[in-house]
Each structure stands twice: as structure tokens, then as C-alpha cells.
Length: 145
Image 1 (spheres, rainbow, N blue to C red):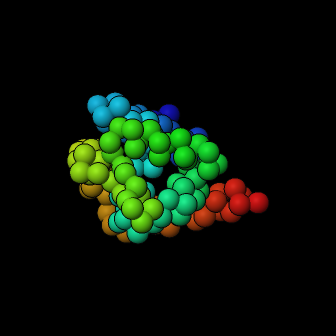
Image 2 (image 1 turned 90 degrees about the vertical axis):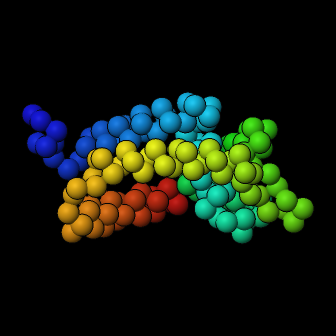
């Protein structure tokens, strides 16, 4: 069976996730980040300094499917690494160094994903996005129970 013969299934989704995760872990090794720390840094940056500490904790905990304590630990590590900082108003934002690390990893990831699916027809990508978004929404619903 070739990879093009793999039926749509949890195994296929898992294999894709493992491949993408392996690439990401290689990129994160340079700055010394774990995947949860990367997600935390990414959500911090994508919030555009609009979330206070508690809001950011809730967003990260939801994304990582963890509790607040685990999220607080990730935020503490990122702060100690000089990648994020809390402002006087309690809003957490990335530092210049945090933005540099984010930009480097995001740039490499963009090039990688372009090689993986940059030549796939837009219509096919839209179908894949709809299917995976539906599955994700259902999974999130299950976690909310």
C-alpha cells in the first residue's frame, strides 16, 4: 500500500500530524522550544497584545487541551526565556526576541507547507479544510463535555 492508497481514517490524520509535528520539532530545537511553548508563543503573538493574562491563559489552555496550571508553566518558561513579557496593564505580549523566533519558525514552516501542498488545486484544499474543520469542531465539542 502506498501513501496514496491510505483511506481517510484516524490513522491517516495521525500520520499527517506526526509528519508535520516532526518538522515543527526540528524547527523548535534551535530556539529550544517545546510544541506547547510554540503554541503559547504563537497565540500570544496572534492576539496582538489584546489579551490580558487571564484571557491568554484561557485561550492557550483551550488550544492545548490542558489546564490553567500547565499553561501558566508555559508562560513562565517563555517569560524566563525573554520571549514574552507582561505589560503594566496586565496584557501579555511577545518581546522583540519572541517575534524574531516566531518569524523564523513561521517562515520555515511556510516554505515546508508550500512544498507539501502548494501545488494542490484550491478546490481540493477547500474541501480538505472543510472536512478537517468539521472534524475539529466535533472533537472540540467532545472535549467540552
